[in-house]
Length: 120
Image 1 (cartoon, rainbow, N blue to C red):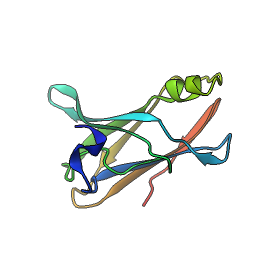
Image 2: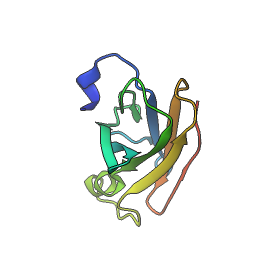
Image 3: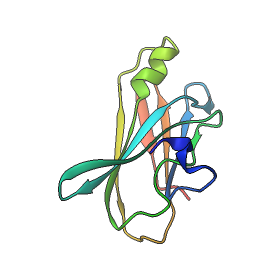
């Protein structure tokens, strides 16, 4: 599913990427969302951060309780800026414990560090 394929429908899982090295939103970061199934990891969504560093339509409007991961292509993001980075990708694994809740997975990046937390 492409990020804009679901129109204005808000995803059950969203993200926001901030480049702490520049103090700005990180636009153009590609991300892939996967669910851990009996068959292994299955892609359920993908997108690219907008000018505000957000992907509002990363995945489906509903997800089941389970284990998920989001992979961010930070190597390409920094490569496009001509900046060396230690992390070619950032993978965040998380658990959806409440199928009715919205899950926001923010990412703060710099060329040689990253952090994340459970957003709202």
